Image (cartoon, rainbow, N blue to C red; front, top):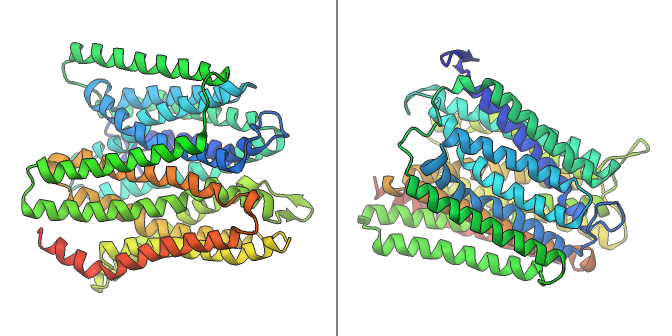
Length: 490
């Protein structure tokens, strides 16, 4: 195929990656929209009947695992498979996971989740890299616009997936929702296979294969899968006692220790100059604050989902809207507000009023906290025995979406700008680990906001508000010092 063909002024390969990512995000967010609901449901066929603490802990482990395994998937992509092959294999494993979850067995439910985590670990870190490789050099003016278009694919897929899989899962049965996610993942892979020629050699592994490395990696992967299989058999037969809350708590501690150990190693043994150490210190501060953000933001698929299902009046002209549809509000706001924020930062930059990087991150955290403050007031009505209007959750999602637009793209830009070149991939991995830690902690927090503690719900929402907004204010007050530290590195 012609690799020079254009798509709205961009390389035609962008369309291939756009629709691949869109349908993968459809499958991921569609499944995520109903995961916690299926875990706590003890009535519908396919529900697991777990308590809120265990269900949300499993949810946190699942979402955290995707980011943790992205580090291994990125390594396999760089050293053995190449981005194109890793992405395609990852997509197949993801689809296998969704179809496995669609089977009517408890073991297949959890085995399918494991497949999705492993497949996402290959898929997630590779496709974004290929978007950047579409442009011949870093100074290509279309590069940033290309990533903006690609980011729209993520949220468009999430918006549609949560509506479709949410409806099928809640109305027909959870297995139908999981199965639909697999069907659309295959749709994305099919269009990728038919149009992959537009990518040319981008993302291909062109180096001479290191056969010894391949053998060692194969043995490691096979051994790992064997251990997981034996563990799955043990869990299914109740030979192994699995306590989700305890596992999530220990996993959070391990991830936190790994992040701390990595930064300590880089500082002490990394051979950094004084200026580079100051840059890494800034990244450490941002990683710490981002962990707080993601622990609150990830309530969307857990505690907020349960709040929508149990305590929100979703009747519209005699028809009850699926609870999982509320999660699509975030994607809708991101799609509609992302261009507004891009224009706002540009306009402020022209007037020399563009907020600094730490100020933007602080604003993201404060807005996240305000979203929990909204639910603090909503929870007062819940305690009184009244279901609340969807408006409360919509306002919360609006604040969380604007907070995401302040923090997420700025955080990624910050890491790529400040990281010493020889640690670029590793520092991005540390940023992903902060998201993983936030997800794991978020699952534990969500368990404290469940149905077994309705009377305490307002207080707990208030505590999350105080924690996240408090860290945001602390970062805001420290912004001048961080900016001076940043200026000393240039």
